Image (cartoon, rainbow, N blue to C red; front, top):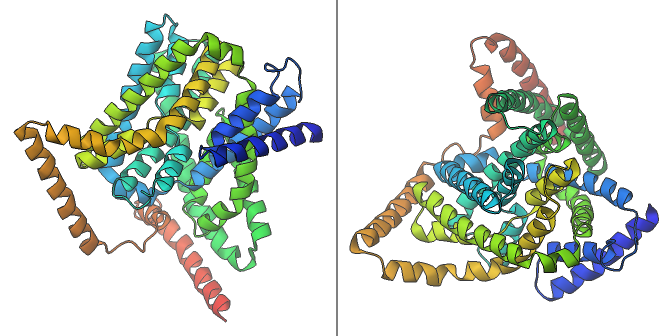
Amino acid sequence: MVHDLYILMITAGVVSLLFKLLKQPVVLGYIVAGILVGPHLFGEKLVDMENVETWGNIGVLFVLFCIGLEFRLKNLFESGKVALVGAATIIVGMLLLGYGVGRFALLDNMNSLFLAAMLCMSSTTIVMKAVDEAGLGKARFVKGATGILIFEDIVAVVLLVLLSSIAVKNSFEGGELLEKVGVLAITLAVWFVVGILIIPTFLRWVRPYLNDEILIILALGLCLGMVLTAEEAGFSSALGAFVMGMILAETKESHRIEHLMEPLKNVFAAIFFVSVGMMINPASLAAYWPSILFVSVVIIVGMIVFGTLGCWWGGETLRDAMQTGFSFVQIGEFSFIIAALGSKLGVTDPAIYPIIVAASVLTTFLTPYIMKATGPCYNFLYNHASPRLRAMIDSREQQVQKAEQEASVAADNNNISSADKVRHAVRRTVVTRRLVDLFFRNMSENDASAEESSKQ
């Protein structure tokens, strides 16, 4: 196993360094490294595939845990309508488009459903990295785009659970699916509310004793504990890792945990993407290149259209809506996970996996260049728009600017965390008011004494 890890890491390091010098995302380097060490290129096994699969599965858990750590309820509240309408438009639109593409390609319902799920999610990691590298980190559209990506991540995890259930039974029943969604929603709500009530309070109690070593061990223990809980409840381990990341994101230690997890996430994410590349047969890429180009065009055009429309309907200006749509023109980690799930369960056509991975590589490579085309495309559309449409564009710009000014003046509750809001909401319920009031009264006394002792 040490030999396998050595081969993986040294190859990934050298190839990703080359891609960094070429100013390309290192994720592409990891996938290429996987192709190099995989069994298809040179006809021999340089590493044990079972060991790599084990490391890759662990990598998925840590990647989803860290994605959950980046989840902020505050970001959803701030982006509001834009995030909800934008994400719904993109997800529903791309699901329908992806399913239609599958049926057009004469795939059966199961393959078309998995294909649709693979095409409806942009890559949070790649989008945020592309935005930062383009110097747009503080641009106005970023808040709405972040909210949309958060919603997409949540829906992706839910899709993983639902697709697993559908694939195991090899059937698609509407009533049973609704029941599964209902059970999942209730389970998530219970986990999240209980976690928000208990874990932040516990971390405040032990905060004086939390050095970096203890904190990272405790965070990983909570993550793995939730993974086991999810598996015992009949859901995927990925769901448990993501939920615990979401819960810890609402604690005061979230940024510290995120910082401590960064090296571990990078290592296991690299292993995961290398394992993705190992499943690609270069010969199949040559055989399927028309399908790869077709799927890539569908992703790019679909994301631009649905992303722009969703953000416009959500209340953004046309320029911001187009910037969001033009930055979402790729698929990434969740698409790989869904593709790997379909292959592992044996319910998807073997050709889908290399096509999806190759389309992801191609769209990721093109993302920075497509983002640069936002300005010229906006100017062309604005200059050739009808007077009525141009008036609507100008009116929306004025409305957004006015709303920003009012929001900056009326921001009076920013110091209240999202976790506190959830706890206050629970406290106001009729059934639990007295019990929870007593519970929180004890907590507040302990918190106050802890703060005094820490000051001393």
